[in-house]
Amino acid sequence: MQIGTDTTEVAPAKRLKGDVVFRYLTTFFAFSILGILALMLYEMASESMPSIKAFGWRFVSSSEWDAVQEVFGALPYLYGSVVSAALALLLATPLSIGAALFITEIAPKRWGAVIAPLVELLAAIPSVIYGLWGVLIMAPWLQLTVQPFLIEHFGFLPLFQGAPYGVSMLAAIFILMIMVIPIITSITREVLLAVPQSQKEAAIALGATRWEMIKMAILPYGRSGIMGAAILGLGRAIGETMAVTMVIGNAPNISLSLLSPAYTMPSVIANEFAETTSKLHGAALMEIGLILMVVTLAINALARLLIWSVSKSAGGAT
Amino acid sequence: MMRSMAFRKTKNHLMTLLMLTATVAVLVPLGLIFFHILKMGFSSLSLDFFTQIPKPTGEEGGGMANGMLGSLIMIAGASLIGLPVGIFGAIYLAEFGGSKVSTSIRFAADVLSGTPSIITGMVAYTLLVVPMKGFSGLAGSVALAMIMIPIVLRTTEEQLKMVPGSLREASLALGVPLWRTSLKVTLRSALSGVLTGVLLAIARISGETAPLLFTSLGNQFWSTDITAPMAAIPLQIFNFAIAPYEDWHRLAWAGALVLVTIMFCLSLTARYFGRSRHNG
Image 1: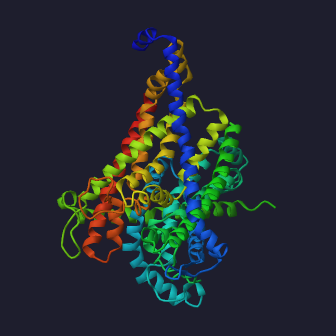
Image 2: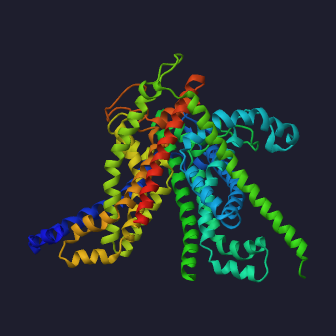
């Protein structure tokens, strides 16, 4: 009521002016998001220029990282990031798909209603808390039980050689696995829920068992969405900083052994960026950041494309 | 070629068992994390935690009161920067955005939200810490705001889209200018949903550590000066967890319990607002 009486008193020209101001204001804020992204990319690129010019491609192929000699090669960090994220994903994906299938298709609806928000809550726990748990509870457990066991029984494999340190590539893989599982599970669950009921009913009507129904009707339908979920998990794992820094041991090794300490791209930034010894040192860390940003950008774009294609086709089917 | 029914049934049971096992394997480590946070947290929590600042190495006791204050100040600062950008940006997308411009803004927001949070710290470092010649709470706020903006933008936009067009049209037909319609009709009727997004964004940034490592840096003492290094709970948890002192580990656990509790309350409140909207 009040709105009506208010506006009758305002002259049309003034009303228009308010709208113009409003339009400029919102446009400014909306475009500032584009500005932030552009600024971000520009800063990362320009700040890493000295390192790009000094080392070229050697930056990603050399493993010499010497702040005193000012020679920087990021290979150990690239290796550590790729191996830890890939293996974590390899372990997490089947578990997440299994759990998501169980929640949506097998467990009673009421269980799903309890487990699903719980899983989503876990995805929100800050990574520093995962790291705290990892370094104070999991790493000692790995050092005292799991790693000695692996060395004793599988020590002949190059994967499990060396002394049990606790903090290691293995610890990083485990903590990343635990961290990406809630993400992959909850997205997979959403993808599975988008599978049309008619598809499932058709399979059941043909006499399929429940597993056959999952295999024939659900998984093919949700395949690209589930892949998208896994790739989104990969993006998260590659960019993960705190938890990994706390458990990986921070040693720039390239070792086949999962028991030896390693290093990742975000970890070396976290540990060294606040105390760079020279301009080139800072630029080298910036270049690592730039690589990290480009890689996660590509990964996320791919994941979103896959998930989007599913929700679109699901939307079209109903 | 039809396999026997018994085989198919056995396989069905076997796969069901596997899926159950996967669910248990997923829930056990997560349950353990919760268990340890509660157990170690409650046994380490005391009144000192909320009133004292960290004691120097070797001394017993101390708390994270300065970290709580620092976190609060930096979250407030981040909200001051991030909320207008996120909310007004969303209004632009809902009211004016031509499809191409809107798509690129949404894409930019998606890229921002997928960027590792440590990168926002690096950017805030080059933009603020270097020119100001020192680590500061302000730089921390800016880094956190960059994380907050895409979350607020996307949730607000979704909520605004859910407001029925008839409501807006009714207001416009009554001669209410667009800007008042936007703020007083569209935004107001979506308010509880927008609030949900804001609370979730605050919950998210209250646990962020990586963006603060080289922006606010941390501080052992009380400080409310946003141009000086500032303490934050997640930073203190990190520093205390990797230190070799048992006493500091206990403080880190207490900090973790407090942080998780705050985040849990925030997301519970957010869910409450989200739900009351759907019921009403």
